[in-house]
Each structure stands twice: as C-alpha cells, then as structure tokens.
Amino acid sequence: MCRWIAYQGAPVFLESVLTTTGHSLVHQSQSATEGKTVTNGDGFGVAWYDQHEDPGLFRDILPAWSNPNLKSLGKQVRGHTILAHVRAATGGGVNHENCHPFVCGNWSFMHNGQIGGFANIRRDFDMALPAALYMHRHGTTDSEALFLLALAAGLDADPKTALERAAGLGEKLSRERGTTPHLRLSICCSDGQNVYAARYASDQFAPTLYFCQQQAGLIVASEPIDDQPDWQALPSSSFLRTENGEIIIEPFAPDLHYSAQILHSS
Picture 1 (cartoon, one colour):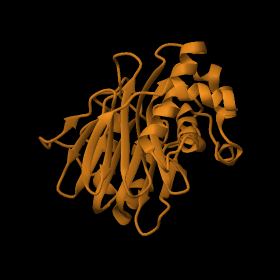
Picture 2 (tube, helix red, strand yellow; picture 1 turned 120 degrees about the vertical axis):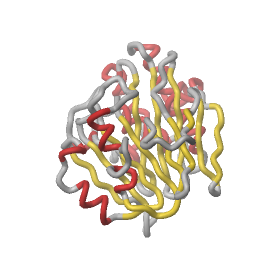
Picture 3 (cartoon, rainbow, N blue to C red; picture 1 turned 135 degrees about the horizontal axis):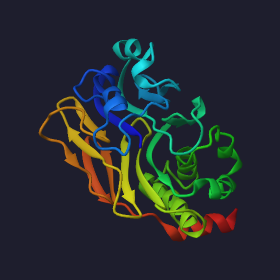
Picture 4 (spheres, helix red, strand yellow; picture 1 turned 90 degrees about the vertical axis):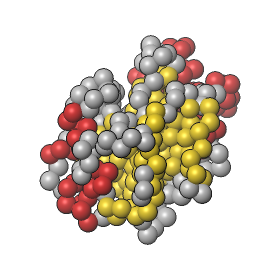
C-alpha cells in the first residue's frame, strides 16, 4: 500500500516532510512499518502551495529514495501546504500519469487503498464523469477516478459530501461487480486553503492514518514521521478537515444512494 503525508501551517521547506525526519516519507518509501508492503518504489510525487493559488507539482516514476532531484528540490522550495506521496501500485501501470498527487485547477489529491475489482468497473467510473472533467483523466488508476468524480460531485462547495459521494460510487460498483475488499481508502486533498482527509474501509482493515499538531503546523500522515508524543490515530470512518487553523473530525460514510443517481443520469 502507498504512504503519504500532508502538511499545513507556516511555510517550510519541502525537505521537512520529505527527507529530514527520522521516519520521513522517503524513509517510508524503503521501510514502511504499518503498510502491507515495506517498500513503496513505484513512483512518487509532491504538490505544494506557496505564492500562487494553483499548486506546484513534481512527480516521477523513479523510487523517491533514488531520484537525484528530490533532495535538492526539498532544500530550495517552500510551501505552506504540502501533499506528498510514495506509491506501491495496486492497479494501473507504473508511469508518470499514475503517480500521485493528482492536480486539477487549485485542487490536489492523493490516495492510499483500493476499489476491489476496479478493472471490471472502470468504464462505469469514466462514463460518470462530465466531459469537462474527463479531459483531465490522464492515467488509469482508481485514485484519479475518485478525485475527478469528487470534483464532479461538488468538491469545491462541500469536500466531505463530495468525497462521500465518490467513495459511494466505488463501493457500490465493487459490491455489484467487483471483488473484496470492496473499498479501502485513506485520502487527502487540498485547495491550498484547507486540508481534508478521510479514512474508511468496507471491512475492518482501513489503511492507517495519523495526525499531529506540531509547532509549525498540522501534519497528517500514513505513519508518524518522528517520535513526537502527540501523534493520534484517526479512527476508521472519520473525516478530518482544517478550518481557520482548527482541526475538526467528523464521521465519514460513503453515500451509496448518490452513486446510483450518478449512474442513472449518465
């Protein structure tokens, strides 16, 4: 399974979340301790927000630990909001278009988990996308499909509801024609102003997710990146959002009824 980290707070260099802590994201790409796979070497990416509304983006198919540019970039580039991801592919090829985070407009998105039997239901996902968003469907992953469907379902207006709607379509279709586990996810997205994250599984094995309010800002991550005592596990079926510097946690449940409406209308 993939590993990811999100940061929001005072501007920091990318290296503070990518490379410099004891269990940084790059360290997790080689030695994850809480994922199904120890190594996550099928590509990586980082999106950051600094002076502009839209995020910067750097992705590559090389493992994060072997990319010659990542360490240099981390020392020079700063951001007040950072999303970074290392990939262990569960579906879709190892190519640039399938590396996370995905970006569309001012939104960035990343995902760890799977939709069971996605290859059997991918066409339904693609058909549910409006033409204006389908043009942004560059890769073949379930993760990118979830992101674009969430945008179609109102991510700009209500991120929690939109993500529940997108997840609902994934779980519904997997239950109808996919395989078990039907849906496992830890997801994170940002518009550069706030960070939104969710943890959920249709069984009892939701991907791990933690958060910690540190001096510089909030960190949400698949695994703690250091030995700080303030890390807390986000409960399964939970949604985390930031608002004016506050952390708000709410229940998260895929909306199976809305998914049926999407399929009918498309």
